[in-house]
Image (cartoon, rainbow, N blue to C red):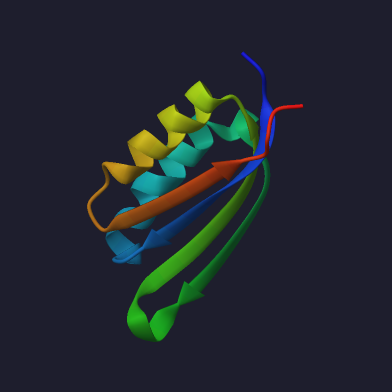
Length: 83
């Protein structure tokens, strides 16, 4: 399956509870991640994480599917067009 460049946007609405679960999944899929930026919003007790990935549609779906099952986590993603 063809790998393409893409992004994953993750919002953790309860960062203290969700962060360890999210980090475990990101470690599991670490070979797909090219870059990662995380910004905590302490006053609102949430965090935003943005990933740059190189993944197939199946790999990206597996990653975002696992993240989306975590309570209090919102996920959106996109991949570049096929060449």
